[in-house]
Amino acid sequence: TQLLEQSPQFLSIQEGENLTVYCNSSSVFSSLQWYRQEPGEGPVLLVTVVTGGEVKKLKRLTFQFGDARKDSSLHITAAQPGDTGLYLCAGTDQGGSEKLVFGKGTKLTVNP
Amino acid sequence: ETGVTQTPRHLVMGMTNKKSLKCEQHLGHNAMYWYKQSAKKPLELMFVYNFKEQTENNSVPSRFSPECPNSSHLFLHLHTLQPEDSALYLCASSPEWTANYGYTFGSGTRLTVV
Image 1 (cartoon, each protein chain N blue to C red):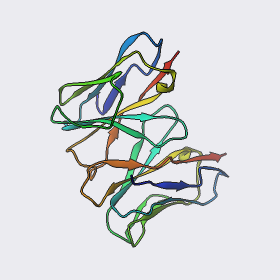
Image 2: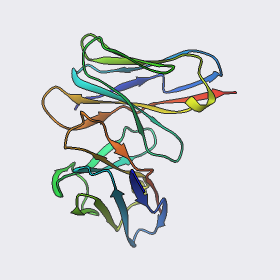
Image 3: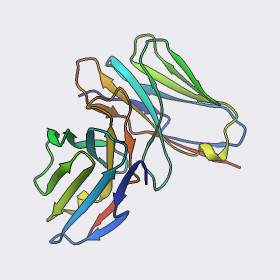
């Protein structure tokens, strides 16, 4: 069973600070996705990365897929209270399975 | 209404009750999924339906029974549940049975078994 380890588990910061959260695995993934889940809602897809070394930007969010396609990071610049939520990474394995495997998530709180 | 809609949003049921969760998507997607989200655990895939046919049953106990009458609707029938089944049940859909396009999730049903 492939596992995605996310760190840190919890993160509480002040508005305006920068932060990075990580998603790591010992397995190679053919693609990796990041979702944000707000309290009382379902996860919402932020980005999909498929190429090793790929970097994608979504406003103040920067996503990077590791060269070996085993890890990914999400960097938020000048965090805002609206960024508060549970950030989940999810990957599809290289073996051809269509299953999406999720990590446990990083719970981010941005205080005003 | 667009997106993926789940009803009810909250459900409290006794261990001897029978209830059903409903999911409806208006996106024209062909694949639908049931996930279970418990505290301190990753999202757990329960069932996958592709073009109304069940393609995945992830060793889910028989007290959970899915039904997919068409590509737009998905149900999860519940009976004789246990307190450890209390969780957020999420429905998702995707254009095809592949994760490449990402999933669109509903808001979930918060289930409490008493």
